[in-house]
Image (cartoon, rainbow, N blue to C red):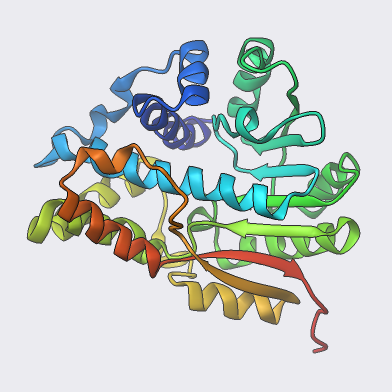
Length: 296
């Protein structure tokens, strides 16, 4: 249980960053859930820690907003958010023709369900369900599939770096089976974890950025008991190769689009913001559909 609670801290930070930027649905979620900003205390002993909220908020916002944009463009009636955390996305993407299904660890789902009525009061027409499912378990995922009637947009943000290669294989099998049954797509906005944060830290902090990034990741890896050397998939190329081998078709799209209006970029100079945008324009998000599984 300790590990689950520690992992949920990342979800709390993501919500806090979006709420601090003034994103309305995130502000509403934070007003209901009332997470403490003290969740960032674990990083405060690191030099230049005062710059961390700026960096983290940029990553949180670009992944949140670009994913929302890709959801709208693909426009399937069911949005299946795997490792959803405390994302307020449900209030952005749901209406009378769209259903949001959030899946996460038991303690996260319990909190969301306990506050469900208050969380959804922000909008009149919001259809959602929350489930606690082991995403690396075939039987549990198949039980979830029975609840989904219609084409599905699957989202995995911040999930893949926590999974071993064997666990990723089960996840790919499960998602391919779902998409072959229902139709739809799978969106991975953070397909280049080895670039996304390091490049942002470097743009904001200059030469000290790389060192700060390594210190932050060392603390976080200890907190959530994660060994990044065991998870593989450090680049979009590696992800795409495995996806194609497992019967998927992959479309690469830029993480940044000109239609996005991001509050977090106003926290830095125009020169720094432009550097960050240029990095994001050459960083890939992935839109994945089920193809034909190759024969062995």
